[in-house]
Length: 52
Image (cartoon, rainbow, N blue to C red; front, side):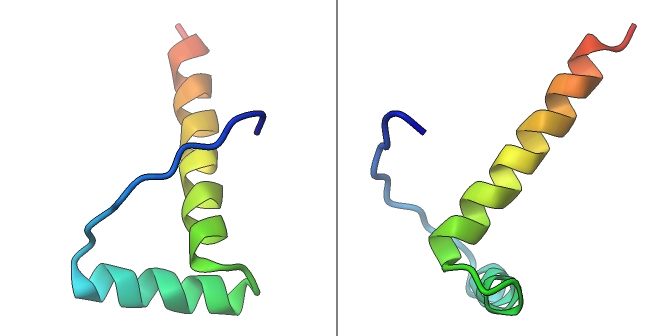
């Protein structure tokens, strides 16, 4: 990432707890877990956009 933008994000408590547990299991920060998952989805969506 060349440039980072700070945002405020509101999550349902159960989603936050799940993401925090996933991050802990992967030994990542909550922020890193969210970025990892968003980037993974973006790559998947990009591949879908390229298929006929």
